[in-house]
Structure formats: C-alpha cells, structure tokens
Amino acid sequence: CHWVVGGPYCDTTFAEPADGGGEEWAGPFDDYESAKMEWSRRAWSTVDDAMCRYRIEKLVKGEHPKSLSRKSGSGGGRA
Image 1 (cartoon, rainbow, N blue to C red):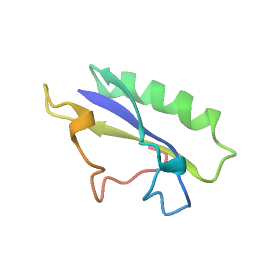
Image 2: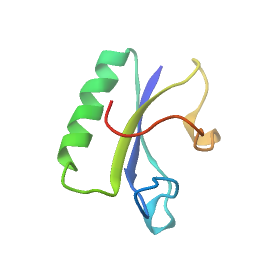
Image 3: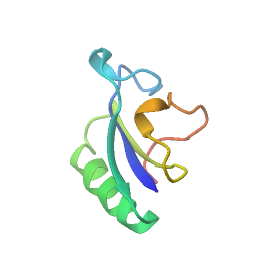
Image 4: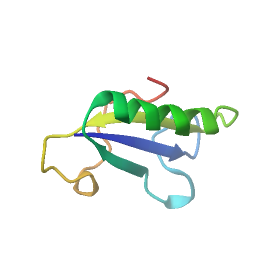
C-alpha cells in the first residue's frame, strides 16, 4: 500500500518536521496512481512554501506507518 507523507519542516534539509510535530501521513492508497493524485493535491497546495514537502512511501501490506521512523534516503520532494 502507498502513503503520502510530509508537511512543513523546520528548514530545507527536510530532516525535522516543523513545530516538533510529526509528519502527516495520508492513506493508505491501493495503488501508486491513487497516491500520486493525493500527493499532487498536497504538493500543489503548498507549492509556494519552500519548507513544505511531500513524498510517496510504499509499505508492506499490514505495516503501519506510525510505527516507522523517517526512512533515510527516501527522497522527498515532488515525485
């Protein structure tokens, strides 16, 4: 399953979510195309905010996103 992950960050390294909050997780989506539509909606709604970023994460079925820490090398940015 696919999830859209991101939101506002402290700076443009996108390493730490802003205000000490966690990343936003939207989903799950059954396929990449459905996740991409949601990613596009969120990314375009924040296109003028340089410190906001969304990405698509693919998780193993049954894996819960809240139990994961931010994956290193997962990219980020606009798909």
